[in-house]
Image (cartoon, rainbow, N blue to C red; front, side, top):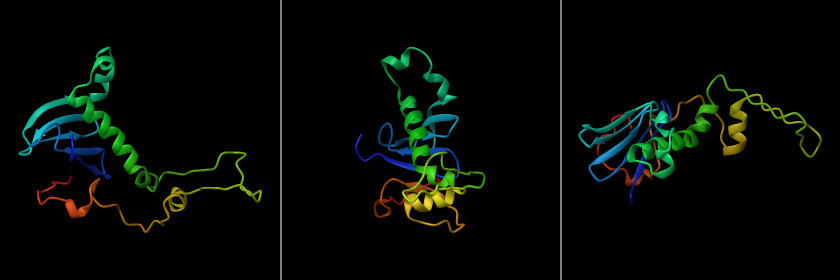
Length: 149
């Protein structure tokens, strides 16, 4: 499908794919459930515990639309929010033993923020990420309400 957009929430495990599976509908990944909604928020199809649906023979033959929402939502949410997650309190990174720099000194990454700064070229300011990130440029965002994503 062309012109498919993903809205990813860094605060909670949520991704919304618009339009999916067709115009006038959207696919919603909410961590422990997936659903297809109309633009008016009417639930057209839903699956609780979508991860368990991946067990069994069926997935070796075909995936349904809810499977695609789960797989893409889970993958994109993890890929795109990892820098934000690593900046949260409670994450501590250390270099592996035996890893050294050219000068012989061992790098010690005791804070995820220092890793993020070196990987992405920024420093943590204490500000929280925007409530909703989009994979499309802001200049093309439509005027429809995003209801938190």
